[in-house]
Length: 513
View 1 (spheres, rainbow, N blue to C red):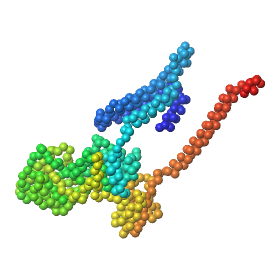
View 2 (view 1 turned 180 degrees about the horizontal axis):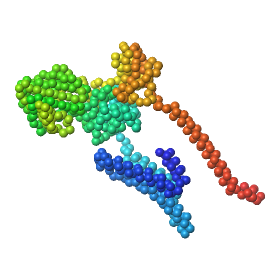
View 3 (view 1 turned 30 degrees about the horizontal axis):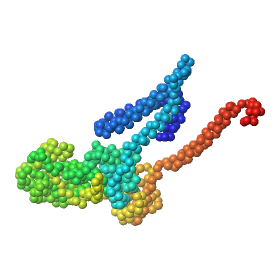
View 4 (view 1 turned 60 degrees about the vertical axis):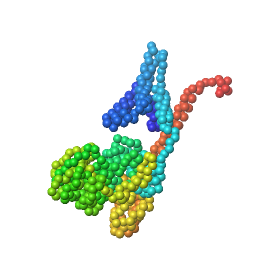
């Protein structure tokens, strides 16, 4: 920016005021209009402005607006002064102004004020809670963490811990599609994993985490960092703990359906408890389905209702369905109106709108996120089935570094490297170049032979050789151009000096010289 500003000021020296005005006015107007449109065109922008834009921010906006006005008015004043100076009758102008000098002083003052405001507004000292960072540095290894708190990507890079996020713009298309399809449909890809303070989408991001937890594990996420105020276990159940407006309802057959986000996707359940207003009917059975269907056995009643023990543990997929049937009477359950819950209840083929059955799931604790660290600000949870950064079916893979692996395979296989598939990556297997293919639309994959192999990945930006050549040519051009410009200015100075020296001087003047 400083270089561009210097080039702009250098060009302004050779322009008249009206030309400067024609150059600056459209750009300033476009910036102001685009800012206003972007701020007020979305509910999030209006909410952010209403909540966060206090007097300090409006003062900054006034400062920017004043700077734009000065930039626009300075050429006008300069043009008026020059026109007045050209008029013979008004040759004695009350003032004259140099547009480039005023603009230069304005830019210097604006930069100084911006820096001073930032330094004065920022706290001079603070205490950083680094216990999550220290824990991750000791235990993360080659895997990743995902943050819904203040460990943003830049800090992950600073402390040398890998996070699941994107740190550069523009966001690669395959990564953006992967985020929306498998990780978090509610968050923009360039904001995914950036943590920060509580935002409008924080609740949605947390629900997305629970709904797609198995996909996070497949992406190599071992630990999740969340704010201390977020009660993640409360999202493990498809219905609330209690409901003041509960009422009985039912039919000869009840079908309950729950979508991911109201239970932990990828976890395993052992039993289901359903609240009923009275004693269960005779011959009551429950069939629980997700990826597969599992019959159950009715046990005794407890505080959560009638408990059905599954014949074997059931792994939860994207949808959970429960069917209740009785041999000779209606099945009545306790239902409640819970806004935002996508849990339709169907009684004998008829949908009961706006209701959810009070259901509790009994999980296998080993399949749930486990709290491993808690401090006054955040909590760290360990995911139970996190994938390694590199894996291959039927192989034992040893991680040498983040880009080098040793695989021992009984038969030929394919090694999955959980790094973004992007142009510029190269792979070698036992020193020989190997072709990289894309796995799951976003990760890298190479073939590995039977036996022990060493696989190495390396990245070099496409066209980097031409970039080095262009840089060398640019440096040479700048060096030669600077020397040529210096010689030209020296010759011009010598010519001006020779013009000013008199051609005829007296002997006395010659001795003085």
